[in-house]
Length: 291
Image (cartoon, rainbow, N blue to C red; front, side, top):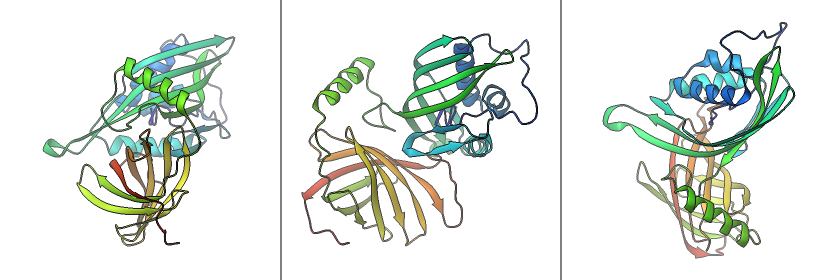
């Protein structure tokens, strides 16, 4: 859910000092368990998520943007914030495959995590096209989600979704044309779509450099398969966060999303809880970037 975020944006059903006992209302198989967890995310049903997710303190899971979850408490806290800060959540599953062997099961899933924020005429809709993998275990007759991992599957996270056939073709083309890490050095015009904010960034070949908004600076953490990830920092208004965009095949444009991780003294803001959509356009190449 990542949010399985988010659906499982965490994962973890930590049994502290007692053993889970299956009840008559528990799902009879791992696929039903997964579907109930996804529905619980949409329904903002924390009790069901808690019951169907393992709480082991040492379980590690990952969500988009490189976010890491260890144990149940951190995930629960961020899920409660997600529920409080969204008007509505929709979690349609577009593909789900499950394999079972004894008391273990593993799955792959694609879903469109859609979150609505604001009210009335100010409602904003953001679609996060996600790809999920995870492992479940049957404990005392009850299937529970253990560890999971999620990433974006769409060329334009947060934007309109491509049709399944188009998306599949795009994936094949991307896989067939992957080459060296693209050179993102140069000047970029950046548009924050929802608020119509425009500014410029001047980046070196590693994707690091300043931008003209509150004394900001971008730091790239990873570029792979045209997926560009990193962080942003704005000392002018004491805020920071992350971003994830997908480069066009010619490397001159990028589209994706950004989000907050800190605002003033408020930290641990869940990824994707609040942010927006980016459109980047390269205007020049290989400038002299201030260090």
